Structure formats: C-alpha cells, structure tokens
Image (tube, rainbow, N blue to C red):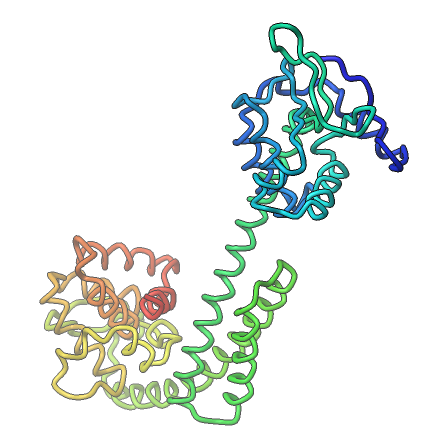
Length: 391
C-alpha cells in the first residue's frame, strides 16, 4: 500500500530521530511473515531491552487486535486506524491522555510508526469493492522489520534471567549451609565467634528477601563464602583437638604390638570378625575432616542399632561393622573400604549408604565403587554428608 507521509500532524515537529525511524521502518524485513501474537509475547520478554513498559505493551496489544490477520506480512496492509475511544476500550478503559503518552513511547521505541492524515484523523479510503487503498493511523510494519532484534533481545533476557536464578539458588544453598553449620558449631564448640557470624547471616537473610540484581547477588555470594570458610576453619580446629586425643590414645594401645610385619606397613587385624593381611591405615587416612556430631545428625538412621549413645569414632566404626551385614555388604567389601578409606571414613560411608539404602540397588557394590575411588584419592565423605543434611 502507498505511504503518503511520515511527518506529524499539528505542532509536533520533524526531528532527526523521526526521520531515522521512518527510514528504518521502510527497510526490507528479514522475515516477511510473522505470527503477530507470538511476536508480541517475545516482545514482552524483551521489553526492558526494547525500552518499553508493561503499560506500553498493553496499548500495543490493543493496536494488534485491530489488525484483522493473524500474521504480520510484508505484502499486506499493516496500518491500523482505531479511534481513541475504540482503542481505549480495548486497552481496558485507559484514559485518552495516558493512551497518547504510551503511543508516543511505542513510536519512540521504533515499534510502530505514525501516518497522520491531513486533518489528523485516523481513517481509511476504500475502493468500490471495499478494499482499503489508503489508510492513516499507526503502521505495524516496524514490528515486522525489527522481529529479529526482538527475538535476540528476548533470548538475551532469558539467558540473563537463568544466570540470575542459578546465582540466587547458589547463594540460598550456601546461606543454608552456613546457618546449619553455625548452629552446630554453637552446640559443639561454644565461643565468641558465633554471635557476630550469626548477625552477619541474619543481615544476609534480610537482603535475600528482596529482588536483587546480579552485582548484589555476587557480593552476597562472596560474603557467604567468607562466612562458610570461617565456620569450617573453626569446626576443623575443634575436631583436630578431639582427633589428637584419639590418636594419642590409639598409639598408646598399639605400642606393644609392633611386629616385623608392621615395619613394612602390614599387620594382622580383624575387620568385622575377618582376619586379613592388609596395609595398616595411616592416621591421616583414618581421621575424617568432619565432626562426629555432624555425621550423626546427617545419618540418624544408624542410631537405633546402637545399644548406647555413640560418643566417639570407635563406637561408630563398631556400629557400622554391625549394620553393614544387615544391608547385604559382605565382610570383604567392608574390609576393602576400611583399607582404602580408613575405618572412620568407611563407617561414615556405610552410615550414609544406610540413610539412602532405599535408593541404592546394591549397597555392597556401591561401597566397593567408593572404595576404588578412595584408593586413588578421588573420594571424600564431606559432600555425601552435606547432601544428606540438605536433603
């Protein structure tokens, strides 16, 4: 259809931006046909990048409803000419002054173009068959021309939203770890460290209740990571104090049992009633970097099998040696785990398997697989315990 003019009616002046938008609107579109409602939904996703608001889009939705075809096509008439009254009705009763403001915003964003008549009215001229030959109103062709830009902006918005969601999830999970570990630390190692950490965590919790941007979430993640590091250092120091006492006690008990085999790192020992010749576990292998209380909190299903309260690693090892048979773990698989991991870590692993035994098809095979990983230094019980705590 012939376009007669792009200059505005009345006192609105011609500007360089108006001329530039008019020229861009006449460019050949990359996609000659496009579903108008699919394009509108894509524009809703990209609205921030395209410089329009949700209220602007309400008016655009009303304008699109006056286009009779489901598609925007380059070879069809794309000028719509509703009166302000009709447009206001389809824009949910929006006031005419507000309507004019949002129409101006859509024009400025380059999503529609004005084609004003000599008297400023919107109307169409038709031939004898009723076909529109000339129309004055709002041209929707700029939407078709910019369909590619709109799609790219929408995809960028979706990608940014996905990154923001992942970062927020990461911050929330780290905050939860910090809160639970802090509470555990207050119970097991009371001291002046926990009060300021708790105050910082409370402040972080308040901030996460708001809608934060990427920079704010990055800053929160760094702060939570710092708090987690402080907590883990404090728990590690507490556990080392208990671990040193246990190692001293064990050394005293074994001081009179050294043999020629022990000089080569081997000794006769019983594991769950089976005597084997295996390398003796070094203290660095046997002592886990986890508090015993944290392990029992994550794996409470093992506690009913104990005849009394589990207060040290030796009792947990004995309890794990008992329950492994009930789970179908053979003595050889248990002995392999003790050799590869050390008895304490092997006991933690068995307790963790028991906690999820309904989800594990073969507990014995699973323990053997973890033992093979531990033999090459590729297994640590920490992630397993933290996953159980989070679950």
